[in-house]
Image (cartoon, rainbow, N blue to C red; front, top):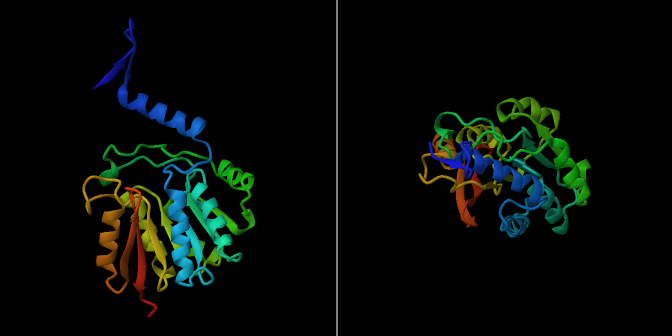
Length: 244
């Protein structure tokens, strides 16, 4: 195993753990309440302008899967208000304990257990401190296979999706998300995959694989590729769904 060796010392630290420690330290102490990628702010603005043009902001809500520190969720609310839409509700799903341990196809070395850790309490405080309206934001804690259920839909009286922001990295997570949103889609719903290009094997891992399987399983749901952003994201629009 490659390792880092301190000068004049026999104490050795595996490089991968040193990198992860430094990564967590930077994110938790120095990054603050900012987007992981700087382009997210402009992208969110573009997505909401597009949704407003499609006239779906007043008929659907915003759903985010993978919240981290809450920046994109908070910014989504700010942009929606700027678009003149004060009634939209926002749902943020996360386990709030960082990524679960990668297994199976997700165990590629690209992500690690505990990455993107931030507690629900810190997320709520971040949003509130920066002027967000928590009365319209529902932070739903738990692993997706436990929270993305019909029971959750009924409990929160969820309505159709205007924008679904999928930022969950793993194939296994994205697969559960897509099954959950299936019955909440409407024509012109925007589905945003923030980790579309997270892996080097297109269509064989992560969100791309989950998307491919979903479209094959539900051929009546038609999705049109609208635009990509940064190096990693992709936006789709629903052009036909089973309700039609």
